[in-house]
Image 1 (cartoon, rainbow, N blue to C red):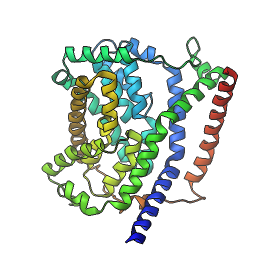
Image 2 (image 1 turned 180 degrees about the horizontal axis):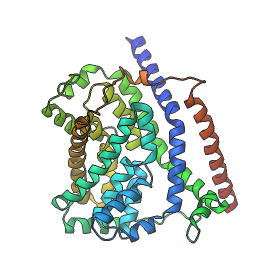
Image 3 (image 1 turned 90 degrees about the vertical axis):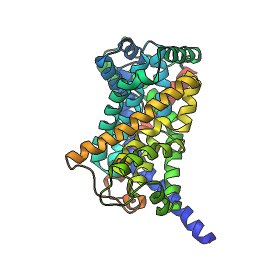
Amino acid sequence: MESNILQLLVESLKTTGLLIWYTLWAFILGYILSAAIQTLVTREQMSNVLGKTGIKQMSLGGFFGFISSSCSFASLAATRSVMVKGAHPKNAISFLIATTNLVIETGIVLWLLVGWKFVVANFALGTIMIIYAYLLYRFFISKKVARAGKEHAEKLEAEELKHPSPEGMKWYEKLTSKKGIKIISYKFLGEWKMAYKEVLIGFTIAGIVSAFVPDSFWNSIFLESGAETQSFLAIVEHALVAPILAVFTFVGSLGNIPLAAILWSKNASFAGVMAFLGADLVAATVIYLNAKYYGWKFTIYMSLLLYVCMVAAGITVHYLFAVFNAIPTARPESLQNMLSFDTNSHTFYLNIIFGIIGIVLLIVRWQFIQKAK
C-alpha cells in the first residue's frame, strides 16, 4: 500500500516536471510578446476609449484584453485599473474575459498539450463569452450595483509602483531603444512574478489529479462519459459541472490548461472542456479577490453572469464545431502520454533559446534596479 502511494507520488511529481518542461518556452515567448504589446498600449489609452457602451467599445475591450496579461490574478488588477480610470463596467468585463481566453501564451500552451483545434475553439469561446456577457449584462448587474462596485474599486486603487514610462516615445522606440527594452524587461518580470505561483500550483494539481484520481470519479460526475456520441442532456451537464470543478482548483487560466487536458483525456465532452477553460474567472481565489476590489454584491452578480456565459459559450462552441465535423477525436490515455523528455526535440532547443532570452531580460531588469538604488 505504502509503496503504491509512493509510486503514485513519484508519478505525479514526474508529470508536473514534464508539464513545466514541455511548456516553458511557450510561457517565456508569450510573456515577452505580452510585455512588448503592453509597452505599446498603456492602460490610460485603453480607458480613454472604453467609457461609453456600444459594439465598438465591446470589441475594443476584447482587443485590449487580448494584448494584456494572461495571468488571471494580474488580469483582475488590470481590469480594476481600467474601470477606475473610466471604462464602463460592461466594457471592463469584456476586457476581463479577453485577458484570460484570448491571449497568446494560453493559445501556445493549449496547442502543445491538446492540439490546434482547441486553440481555435478557445478563441471562439472567449469571443462568444464576450458577446453573451454584453447582451446579458443588464439582466444581472443594475446601474446601482455597478456604481457601488466602481466606487469600492476606486477606494482600493493602489498607487502603482514607479517604473520607466513609455509615454512620449514612438512605437518603434518602445521596442528597440534602451529605455524601451528596460520597460519590456520590467513588464516581463512583472508577468512572471504575478503568474509563477498560479502556474506551479496548477501544474502540481494536474500531476496529482492525473496520478491519484481514478477514472471512476470522472465517470461518476460526467453523464455518458466515454460514450462515442453524447446526448444533448449530457453535453449540457458537462458544461454545467466542469466550471464548478474550476472553483475548487484555486488557480487561474494558465494553471487550468493542464487540468483541461486531463478532463479531455478522461472523456469529458468538448463542451465541458471548453466551459472549464472559461471557468478560471470563477475560481474561488478569483472570486475572493474580486470581492476585495468591488465588494461582494457586485462580485456575486458578475460571477453569476460569467458562469452563465461560460456554460452557454461552451455549448455553443461544441455545436459550432459539430456542424463542421471539427470536434477533436483523439484522446490520450493519460496526461503522461502527452509528455516526454527528449534532448533531440524542438522543445529542448526552444527551451534553451527562450531561456537565454528570458535570462537576458531579467539581467536588464536587475541592472535597472541596481542603478535606481
